[in-house]
Length: 276
Image (tube, rainbow, N blue to C red; front, top):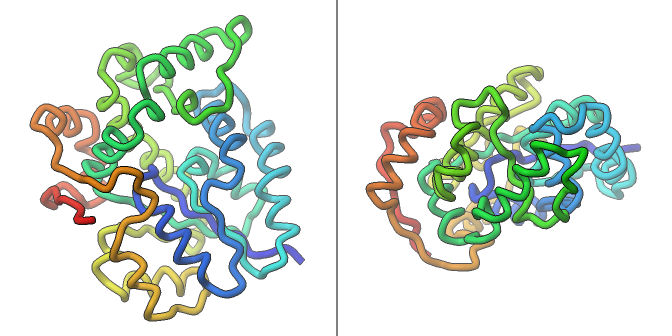
């Protein structure tokens, strides 16, 4: 009998590693963080950009995630991965009963974290240009290797930023990513039955044990009070520093992602600094 599947989808830099660690500590849960990332990240980008169709994406996910769920020895199998955010319809088609947690964080903190801490691993000039060249002519230009730095989605042709994406700088590209990935998640989850998904802000999980307990109830998992303490200190941080955005960055972020900030309930919230 297959395990029950669930997926934490987000923009990344939003507490996915922290939530993975908390859920992994729950008895009888097989929990992963970015399962098969070297396969899934290029797959997600190709699917979003229209380089492959839904059937091809489903075939790969059938061999990875669906197979892992089928052969799991526990009753619950989960993956906390921003890469899966672009593949929700395909996952839902393969695993119709799967549940999804849409985990969000203030986009200013996400963009700042990506920009300061991933440096050449996320939308750097060279890697972005290489993927753009391949995407423009995939039949003649070989794809880059499946390293993370190469495989970050580029705007589709109908996106207002498509023509200028390589010129808006690394921070601007990251701001677009936060806004677009959340748009894609919201659209995909709206097409599923309401009982299959739950929206949660990282800031609320860190502030309220009740919010964390609601999440565990949604997954039909036993909640332990000591789990809340795991959210007191950030995880998956290679540079334990944080700072506010610079005025120029703040203005660019607002221009690109301001509407999504309103949509996710952050427009009226003050920017904060994480204490490590």
